Length: 311
Image (cartoon, rainbow, N blue to C red; front, top):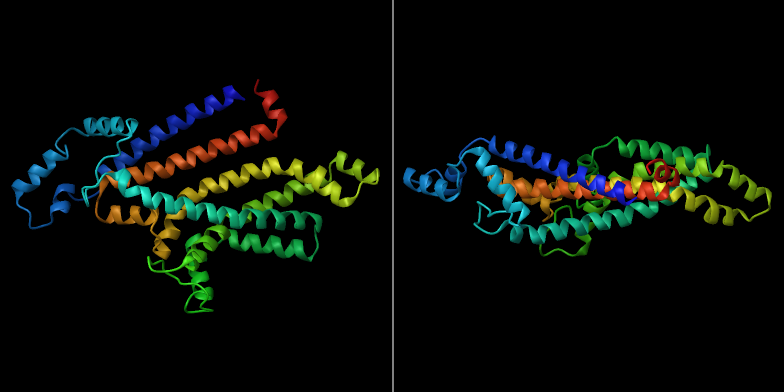
């Protein structure tokens, strides 16, 4: 297990390095001059050149990348072009807001999805099973951005009026509901399908059948024998869905004007704030890689055959 975790950590580090190359190349390819955009159109050529020297924009691209990479390794993400503030300071609040939003969405989606999947497996080929399968298929085929718009139309001011459709600093806790529900609907269908499939496989296994033949109570069969053996593969899917949240939260935050990393990223791209764009994208990639690593570890810990086969 330790060796496999180390190998995956190394692959994760290599992946993050590759992402850093892509991110840096993409930001370098953005149109326009960063110094000119910061100072505005009325800036004199002398001021523009002075700022370019200050930002090391005259350095070769390879030197700029190495300087940026060295800063990241040392914990220095650079300075925002827009407000001349340290990127770490700019991101501290939005990152906490985004992580809170992702955590609430996971807490809302995971228990309900596990319950729906388990009940669907127990009532296989019945009305509830068909309804849940069709519902998850439909929800999974709709992009989260469209799901958010539909929730606004149904539950926002233009519909039932239960929740506000746009986040504001003066608003109350109810303004978190629509973003949380949007992300919950996005991550729930794969969990439901995996829980249903795994529970069906476990319920048809020999040890569950033997427990039933011995007269063990059906509830005990379900919760002591079936559910624990189904949790491993499902937990891996849950972790992968949480990894998806790291990227999917961007579009949802933009839709609801939520003050997280998604809104920061959109504003940074519009303002050509290169250090901020680089930091946000690299942060999202890092979270995605880390959660995928956790998913791999969960899968290995839950499957003794995999551990033995990789010794």
